[in-house]
Structures are given as C-alpha cells and as structure tokens.
Length: 432
Ligand SMILES: NC(=O)N[C@@H](CC(=O)O)C(=O)O
Ligand SMILES: [Zn+2]
Ligand SMILES: [Zn+2]
Image (tube, rainbow, N blue to C red; front, side, top):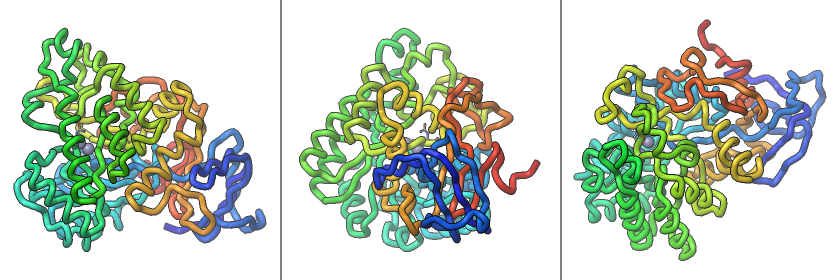
C-alpha cells in the first residue's frame, strides 16, 4: 500500500477516546495521524457534512478462509469490511481446517498479507477441531499470532475442560471468547422459544441456554482470573448476570450484534432463512435489555458476527438452513438507526462502541485518532440514504435481512495506515 499525505477538511471529527468532537481538519502524514502541514504537500478530501472518526473495529467475523471460500474469502471479506467502514477485524477459527494449530494461523496470516485490504487478526480454537474434548495448543497458537481463543459456532460443554482453557489462556494472556450455548437445551432448535415459536410451530431455543453458560463463565472467570468474553449476547438475563459480575470486578465482557439490538423473533413469521441465526432473534424485552446493556457499559461493544452463507444454501426449509447473516456492510447504518436515532445514544457513544471499545477490549491497535498512530480512519455520511443490493454487496454472500431495505448512513472513504482502501462505492484495486 502506498500512502500519500492527506488533509481531510471540514468534517465533524469524533475521536471517542480523547473526547474530541469538533468540526475541523484531520492531517495524515506518512500514514500516521499528524499535526497540520501545508495544503500543497497533500491531497485534500472535502468532508463537510460528514463524520470523520477512527476506522471501525469488528471483533467477530467469519471469513471462511480456508475451506469454504465459496461463501467468502479473505479478499472479499476484507472488501466487505472496507465498504462498511471497518479497518480492523478479528476473524473466527471455524474454518476448514479449523484454527487449532499454528500452521493454519500461518496460512491465514500469509493470505492476509497477500489479499487483505484491511487489518485482520486471527483467533485460535479452544479445543482440538472445536470438538470440545481436548485442549488446543494455546501456547503455540499464541506464538503464531492469535489475539484470542474461541470455539465460536460451538461451546465447550465440559466445565472442567473450560476451566482448563481459562487457566491456560490466562497464562498466555489471551482473552477467551465464548459462544454461550448449552447444547442439550437447544438440540434441533431453530428460533427463540416463546410466543412466536409456538405460533409458527418451530422448535424453540430458550434464552436459558445462553444464561446457564454465561453464569458458568462468570464463575470460571472468578475462579481462574481469565478474561472471558461473551459473544453475541442475546438474552436479558445474560445482560443482568454480566452487570452483577462486573460490579464485583470479575473480568468478563460482552458484545451485542446489530441484528439482536434491532430485530425480534416475530420476523421469523415469514419463514425467511435470512432471519435465522445463532443465537436466535429474541423478543422485544430481550432486545431492549441489550440496548440498556450497551448504554450502561455492561455490554462492551458492537460486533457483527458477519456469517456469510450463499443464497442457495439458505434457500431451503427453515429447519435445515444454516445459521447466520452477513453484517459488515450494514452495521454502521443499523447502529445509527437503532442506537443513535432510535435510543438516544450520542454519535460519539455509538462510534465508541464500534471503535475504541472493541479495540481496547481485545488489546489490538486501532480505534483512535491520537497523534502519531497509524491513520486508520473512516469518513462517513450519516444522512446518506441507500439500499443494499445483491449487485453492490462486496461480500460473496448477501444473506442479510436488510437486503433491498432502505438504510440511512454509509461509509464514504475508508483509510488504512494512511492509504485509501475504499471510496466512491469501490474498493481500491477492485476489478471492473
Ligand atoms: N452466528 C451464526 O449463526 N453462525 C456462525 C457461527 C456463530 O457465530 O456461532 C457461522 O459460522 O455461520
Ligand atoms: Zn457464535
Ligand atoms: Zn460467530
């Protein structure tokens, strides 16, 4: 990536970490955020009417590379991220082969160096082949460069093994990210257990299946001192458990997805597999509890759980359709709608949940416009109206409930280390 000096002129600069929120100019020299310099040394980008903030950070995406690259690969996944305004992502290890060994991590890092347009941080598995039976080689995964460990997609059911995982991860100073699901309680389940599952005649998935594991993880975090992070929290009682645990100073954290804070189980009424995900969309009271969790800091950040599946894979009976939806290209407008316009969060608060908060939580760089740091920057238009379409999605998959639905707010320009990687609807270097 070559970088030219940039002056981003006249935008509303929002840097949640420093509290900066003012209309002004942002200077980027030699790929870093810098003090002012003269206009003839730089390209000037007019950002009037736009927001200028740190590039978005997503700590939970699935890029399917290696192994399921018909759904997504590191190239298209990072293009999708850049188009959504993201400059850093943490990718999940449920690839094929799984990331339970240093070789797969090395392979991913090599592909990232060759094909990625934004920063990608890999995670390693908790257990061998994510089978929940034997510990993965966490020390060797750490050496290979993982930033956290998780069996996302699955949840370790054996508490003694989970204790061991937590102990090792603490030793290697890696956060444990957990997909909290008691699998005996969710066998064959398709959607949230409640009024709508009853009406639709679909097997329900109780919120208790999540709560039980969140409680288990809180107890094991207290016992071992490990940082345990709850992925895609979807249940009101899980939020309350986290709230109480944090009050006691236990090292736990949680994320919420744009879809769980915006949609509910009633949308399954049309039996549309684009509304089927794990954990499932829940009822209105759960949705509101997640928003309150984000408001008071019980939930630490937004994470998309970008889970690409091709349309033909989803286009089957709801019972057998795969779980998951893509999220990177729609996360920003949805969070603006649900949190900012819909729930009274300030713009800096929303940006904080999508930049500084997730980056600091997972100890990765980014999420800041501090002087001298790598210039990972997003310019977005909070008012821009657009409609996500099959043609425009950069992802290989468009399994999104927001396909063909009008949205407001869109990334204009995404900058990584001072280089523009996305502008005017195109990823730099993308073929015609
Ligand atoms: N969220 C999903 O519904 N699916 C994810 C797995 C996961 O995040 O648990 C996937 O890999 O497709
Ligand atoms: Zn998961
Ligand atoms: Zn996931």
